[in-house]
Amino acid sequence: IGGRDFEDSKYNRIVQAVRQPGSTFKPFVYSAAVRAGHPVTEMLDDSPLNPPVLQLDSTLWQPKDDDDSTWGAIPMRKALYGSRNLATIKLGMALGEQTVIGEAKSYGITTPLPPYPSIHIGAKGVRPIEIIAAYSAFATLGTRAVPQGILRVEDREGNIVWQPQQVHQPVMDAEHTWLLVDMMKDVIRRGTAYSAVWKAGFTLPAAGKTGTTDQYTDAWFIGYTPELVAGMWVGYDYQRAILEHNAGGGKIVAPAWTSFMRDVYDRRPAPADWIRPDSLVTREVDDSTGYLATPFCPQKLHRWEWFYPGTEPTQECPVHRVLGPALTP
Figure 1 (cartoon, rainbow, N blue to C red):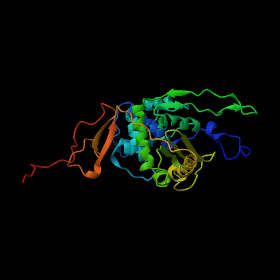
Figure 2 (cartoon, rainbow, N blue to C red):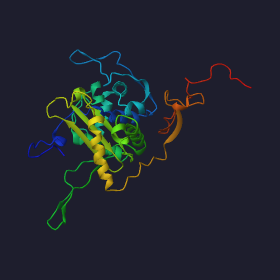
Figure 3 (tube, helix red, strand yellow):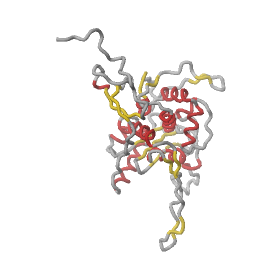
Figure 4 (cartoon, rainbow, N blue to C red):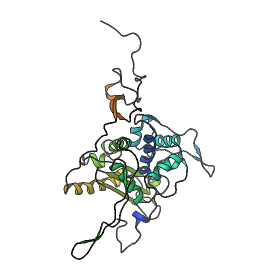
């Protein structure tokens, strides 16, 4: 749906508009990282850029998160479900802007993306139809479905006269995609969409990403189940704030997505969860360090994580350990 009323405006925003995606772009950064062999437990630095980035106009770019907070060292999983800007920017810069641009293109993004660090947090505009379709590669565990505007053409008797041929493009293998989807499930289970989706009662297998741009000019939520992708954008045609405060994607868009999905699955069976590829391996890690958990790590920090073979940790946590000789009775 490209607008509220075709009679009022024939401008199809879903296809014709180019809008900043905000944090809905971040999964492409993490996709590039996972593809390059970075484990989801890798620790990222969520602190201010030091030094700030020198921009083309000779000004310094010092981004921050919406709440002005920093989380310090956090695992890659937490950086994504918590939608942390600074950690994501540093990850993207380490990967390289051209690598992230290439990753986005592999998902079907065709709008020009300049090689600047701000692209990692969605500062460059994309077409809504393209970024929503890109998420189909997550839903299918690696294959992007090319969107079709016409399902079929029927004659007056209901016979199918024409229907488009479905086109699917491979993007990434199932193992790496499953890891990415599992991280994005946490956006709903305990991240920026928790209140609007999971806490609101939609607990079917689902994943997604919220998005909000500077000054609240764009708000997004793109979510998916194993069989359906739905994305929503809210904003004005001209750059102005949707609301003065608290107009994030998790607040004003994700609830509408939840309502839509609830209506869909009131009419059809619940989808089965994504099948985890057998080749992935699991390890119990310390969530604060990314190393193998030991008996001395606080129990609340123990977490079972999944890894692509060869990326799992092999060293025990060096932070939580016995100091001095062990006591014996």
